[in-house]
Length: 423
Image 1 (tube, rainbow, N blue to C red):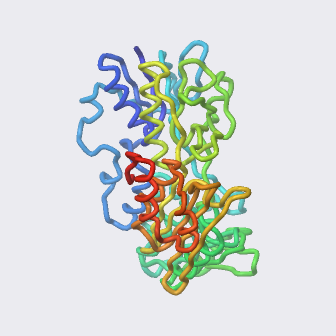
Image 2: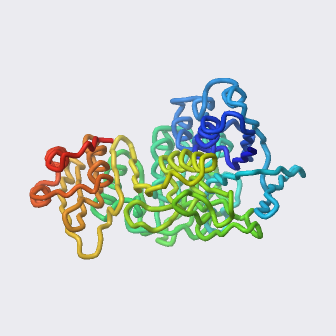
């Protein structure tokens, strides 16, 4: 059996490891298009602040890891897939045949449509190559503008603030991390950042990036009339699944590669995993792209098993979960954190202590949550949502005091005789 995995991120790496477990004698090829060993983008902020070196970003640290597995590594770019002929074409001119193919090409950072965004000194923070440029300019005394205060932007923010640079964050929405937290929590994060010396401009759009004057290389022009002199600009305005090479492949794509509950695409023997897969959402039952590393790892494992053993392992759906550290303030969101039609909610807020809990219910189940300043309940919240346990009388108790989550979890699971456990 010839397995080809396109993409050397977390989904691809986990997949080849499980393919080897399930198929000890098969031929496995892992194709990555970056001139680096497989690495984690989520580790880049730690590299930026010198907590780890480049090797620390690598997904597997031991030398010869993939050789020991008998996995052939190719550093090349796949330019086309022919699902009828079962071949992939490479930028280097070669082609390769497969019996089973996994598309794990991930996503790429979007480039905002801003005049001057291609100027020298304007970078994304998506690859190790980007990180090397950022390290060079994120120095004490330098002025840095970060465009975008979403999840990825706030991860980068942590590292930029630690660098000692003079940091300004510009976000077009009315709050920080708008796709993860509501107005109350998002505005509390903004206040926290400002208290820690970061200037944050929400409800503000960057109109242009011009050539700077004097010692500053760039000038960032905002629609509120502000003009910010900068040594470097970083864009963090979202990501898009890497599906362009699949045009004419016979593989159905939408936001990403459309897959079924086994992570197989519309083309026989072609699967998808990670940020490129439009997979099942645990909470809604629908199919969408969840660009988070836990989902990528889960996809890689399940897809590999189904590629080898047939469709015996159903993907139940991934719980959309984000945990963010912003200058030491931990925030999290889970599943349907924004609530459901006709559902109930509970909320407690302590802005002075930067603590917040919001719980969302559907009937008698917890279906979503968001928190700020709490870490002890992360596993409990996920456990309550994934187990779909009936809360019985604990729903009313949680509406009165949303912090009693551990008590609710223990009481509800014991009442049902569950073997559920905290994740």
